[in-house]
Length: 336
Image 1 (cartoon, rainbow, N blue to C red):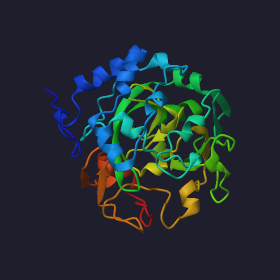
Image 2 (tube, rainbow, N blue to C red; image 1 turned 60 degrees about the vertical axis):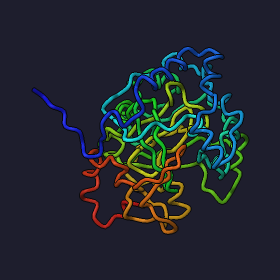
Image 3 (tube, helix red, strand yellow; image 1 turned 120 degrees about the vertical axis):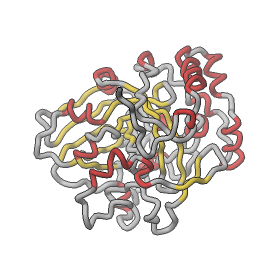
Image 4 (cartoon, one colour; image 1 turned 90 degrees about the horizontal axis):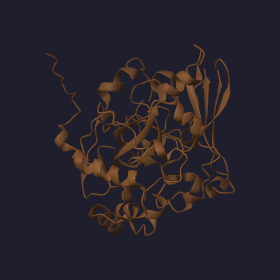
């Protein structure tokens, strides 16, 4: 008889939000009725606590309604239960109102400004060292991919964290679709560029557009995930719609938002924050509680939507999946 042995970082299912509660929430979204959406947008106790700490997000409920998205009929995606979580899911009204999105400004309550982002029409370009360069419409791309939902922890370099139900597809599926050459070693990713709607892109001291990069081994690791939705529906704009990256073992700045280009290359990309401050933000950016940021400790993290501060785990608790990727990287600054 096969007995599944949990990995060291996993906790029992009872440690997560009860599935019946979460599925009932998904059912409300699937109904897509105005009454149901209003009920979902009603502030929760967690959101009330969040507002008391970080300010009000009145009007947020309107931005969480993405029923007009051309791919809304596909949601909710089937849950991939391979990826368990060790904490309750963070309330949507918390994660939807506390965001980094420097294209629209440097403060956390950026969700309002992000509504200016135009997510249709939207195309994604696959180029560089590939068999054939191509540009594909985002809706066609989404419908061509193996879609699923995953529960991931998210750890920001600023020492706060959340737990989110992402919807999307494995990054490996996009790599396979792009058909890179065997000589490609990295994937360079680029976000949208539109200073007319994204006021932050008018700030000349930033090297726009936002650029990130991963190795081919990281891109094809089973954890690497491209996000199209959240909480059982298409992603609201402040989450990085219509396509963002989720690398749960790395600090959040590696998970670039609103992507428009994937370039396969044999040269290591210089990422946005690495370009600005290489002494603080490196290429690898793997989570490690023992390696402090130059200006603060990474040993603990504040869990958004709660009054908890908890110990940080190396690789954000995902070492069983990714630690071997870095076994031969001696001399590299893997944790910044």
